[in-house]
Image (cartoon, rainbow, N blue to C red; front, side, top):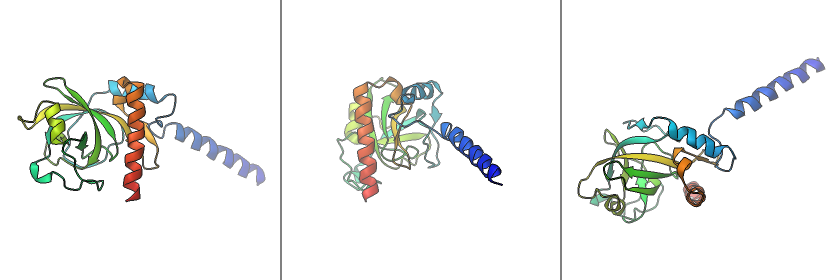
Length: 193
């Protein structure tokens, strides 16, 4: 009987370690995390979806970007902070709150790094809502909606760790370090509320 228990324990431990190896994205500090980010960056972008299901895969997204209407200025966002119209903040219905991503305007090539601090836009075909000042810097304040590609750099996981997304593949070490710190800070603030 004792031999069987030992064999069962060994099998369970082997299954647990092999499952952990394929359980999901690697933490940002893991040596293989950049390689995983490069692999994600090579995958085709995920199209805009209407549902609000959180996507922790770290894959790129393509769709429309809009900016917050004036009636939302200085209101509280999903994370409890007030919208600063000149900050690099965005709303996403699919990226986890606390994520850091780059947004590229596909019409003129301008990019910006944003922090996901709110939910939305709930309009078909759109992937992000940006602060008005950020929309101006990306060159679409007058136009209203433009096609963009969103590349997540860092994403928080439910257990508090931070993982790299597709945008981390081409990010500088300094930007990567800042993104990891920002994600940790944003998720800590959200958890405290």
